[in-house]
Amino acid sequence: MQKSRKKTTNKQKEKMNNLIYDAVVVGAGHAGCEAALALSRTNNKTLLITLNLDSIGFLACNPSIGGTAKGHLVCEIDALGGEMGLNADYASLQLRMLNLGKGPAVHSLRSQTDKVVYHSKMKLVLEQQENLTIKQAEAIKILVDENKKICGVETAQGQIFQCRSVVLACGVYLASKIIIGEYSKNCGPNGFESANRLTESIKNLGHEIFRFKTGTPARVNARTIDFSVLEKQVGDENIQTFSFMTKVFPANKKECYLTHTNLKTHELIKNNLHRAPLYNGSIKGVGPRYCPSIEDKVIRFADRDQHQLFLEPESENTNEYYVQGCSTSLPVEIQEELYHTIKGLEHVEIMRNAYAIEYDCINSLELKASLESKFVNGLFFAGQINGTSGYEEAAAQGIIAGINSNNYLNDKPMLILRRDQAYIGVLIDDLVTKGTNEPYRMMTSRAEYRLVLRQDNADERLTEIGRQTGLVTDERYAVFCEKQKAVNDCLNFVKTTKIKIENEIKDLFDKNNEPITKNSFLICDLLKRNSFDLNTLSSLIPMLQQYPKRVLDLVNIKIKFEGYIRQEEDIIAKMKEKESLLISEDFNYLELKGLRNEAKQKLNKIKPISLGQASRISGVSPADISVLSVYLHSSKK
Image: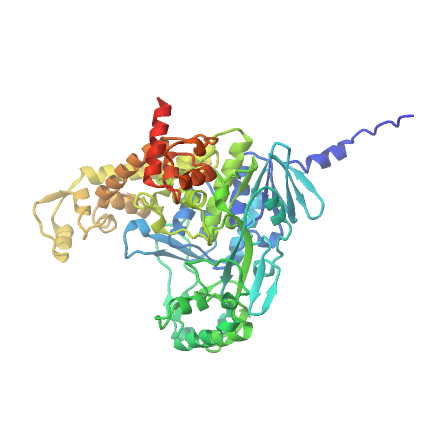
């Protein structure tokens, strides 16, 4: 006799539905936070899985946001509707604009950040976000169906969360190991748990795994620092913030301090290289070229008598200071000696020792320009798992991965920012076109169009795009439109208004030894002289006083660098022809006659989406591009 089947109760159905999501984000570092917010804010039921809720948005290394080129990325994230800029402004201890002695293309905002406040605020933003569920768990397996499409995530606790898209943003937690001298431990930064079982699942999906390394300096007790002998570094007043939504300018609450290593420091390091994991073979992972440990600096730059170190506060509510520039993995007793050789730190107490950390990451060449896996539909990667370094690079990838995961779920075209549109476009294009064999760091020198990719115009470049994705709210868009109107009005005013050369204006000419060739000048013509800028003139011309400093600064740059900007825009226009020649994803380069074998192999592996991207692939020559160009043009006819 057949047993009667039990009906599924409403309670059981509800429980099952609680395990079904549109998307799952694995990792709640800076990439994961932006990805989860982008997905949930575009009306996707989203689950964010993290090993530890206390590591959400955690500043595991340097307690700062921004810096050279990184500040550009934060402004771009904000312009797209992301959270990092707002949160960095909120948690700022000190704001400084770097590179002010150079041109505006490389001016970069940097915030000394309260790491406790930054984490707490970001966690609260996530907790209050509609459509977003946060779960403390360890993801151990990515589930795919027979068609190589995402269908779920399995956790170490045995739960299976069904979903149609996954963003992997694991940071430096994949099979991570910290190393201090002869001591090592399988854990993540700051003693947090590591994810030890997910790497195998990623490999089984077809992805190649690399082993990278990074590190962090010691944290020392402020009560034991002799600040009186150190050079104070104060914040700037009245400069732009990361977010154009920030209404109140952050106060400069804390100072940083400058000191240096010396010959005694260097001698100590050289005498203990046999105990340095970086030099005795204990460390296998590849470290960052542009953020080396102190032992690496001493050996690589043997002609230098000293290296700069910055002492930076970690929070308003702790005595811990971060010794920027002195990351090391030397044994703890050597670290004690090392720090005591440094001016101002002769009697310092180390609260947390410096360490190196090794971790797994993937080969970024195995990603599409959308950050989607080439092997699994609906699987996106973002952050340090892609081989990058830094919070800002991670968050930039996170927001794009989140946007494109939403686009995948809703059958929309992928968002792919060009190199002439954003530093984010440069970052992702470098990763998926050139790859990286060491932790990748964003720098202004990587952007060939950096004069048009300034941080002050990030909203002009990207807010309309953010609006189309659904991330730029009505409130954000209204603020943006109001600012743009002010910029256009101000531009029109300075281009059409003449002022007489008399009184204070004449004094400015005399003070700067500027020749007076006529009785009156258009304001825009005055601005093209080195001695004049809008902020100075605004104190003398009442009509300019209605505009905020941010608007005056932007108009000032537009006028002063008008010719150079136009030149760069002409180059971009010519390059766009290559970028507009699109290539099918399933194009078989092996059958195209005239290409060299190396080019065929590289092109077939990377599968560029355009002739422009193809031209940037290492190993593909101009002659190969000519062959491909001829074919693409002829096939369009």
